[in-house]
Length: 287
Image (cartoon, rainbow, N blue to C red; front, side, top):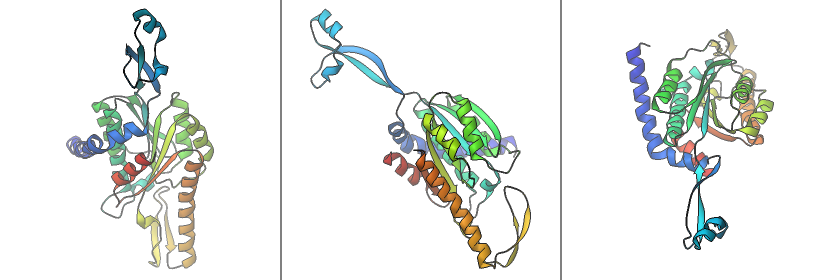
């Protein structure tokens, strides 16, 4: 993709996702993810309805009139976007690839965080850490993140969510809001998620295509494994083969739901042909 096409695509995604974050998500995001605590703002005269526990007795004694301490929410947070860029993210069947939806979701979340003056960082992962962008603020930083989501070419096509979570725990020492965006066709990350979830507020957003759920009966078919690059001749006419495929698929989906729920992390499932806006808003409101 040349620079002109890339800038056009970045701009198109910015216009769409910024509108969503401006009008829909920023308020819900602010409500769902509170700041780290309360910081002292000022002392003012007591007003009817103020909490008497907030009275500053030293100032009250000095002026012989009740005064209260005013606190504000310490709003600034750090959001980490952990995005799976393995081979399976390039699957698509309904006019859009999973990768396109993943990019839009990540951009929408990033602009929502920017609206609240939060820092945003990015981890692109396969079965290794492909790219790490430390958290920073600002529109130009978000645009850089979008550019990387669009054009970054991974070295590996495989997936290892556990490795990515381990890297998160090693780099983010302070509590962060973390969105792991993937199809979660991976296992063996229960332990690392449990450790990471003790420190961070984590949500797994599973993006999937309905045609991945079942293997169609098409007879003998050459199939490409998106994560290994291997081409195999598969007898899709065999009921046992189709059932085995479906079992493996649903085992991984159930593992994702159960593992995230057990660790106290959030779970969102969105299909490429569904509105991720509806799914995310519903999730934020339920928190």
